[in-house]
Length: 239
Image 1 (cartoon, one colour):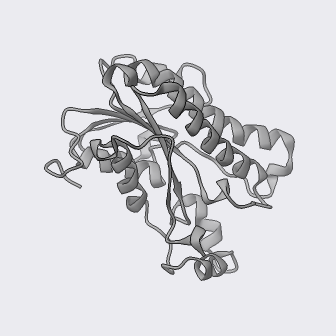
Image 2: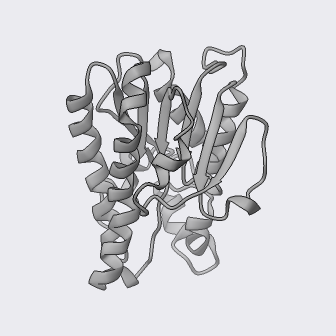
């Protein structure tokens, strides 16, 4: 993706949450490479690698007003991407941990999109949220994560209807991607072998491959796409 590509975002403004590591960081850098000015919100912003046209902002999507503060000086916003998320394997059976995961992954998405709605409406912009393979299959070790990602799918479809025709709302559903969230699965003795055995392309995905799908959904090429969930999973759901 470059400034002269069909995905060009020169002169446009984009907000990405969860943008200080993993997929979120790749998405922020992907939009910047396409020419956008990016506001990248996340925890540990001071330690995130810098990039041209990426403004790193410390912020927690569970804190009321955090997103509003990050975009307070924005006179336009063309796309919002919600990538802030946590997972707490095994501990999610505890109701308090369950609630915390939903607060970040699902309610945090709603907080973010609500904070951005007026600016997105003014620009006829696009929103992209993050679903998961666990939106569709059970996660015995991660009931909160699975519930939150199932909720994201329902939220995206609901907001796509509620906010049409001015704002398009879609989601990506990443497969098994090599990020800090999957480090334990990729370690020896983890579930990595079973995951790869079910993945037709036979490898872990890269954050940049998710970024490409996100940029597409936010671009004019997807101008007739709303309420959709794009699986970027190496064929996992087809197996």
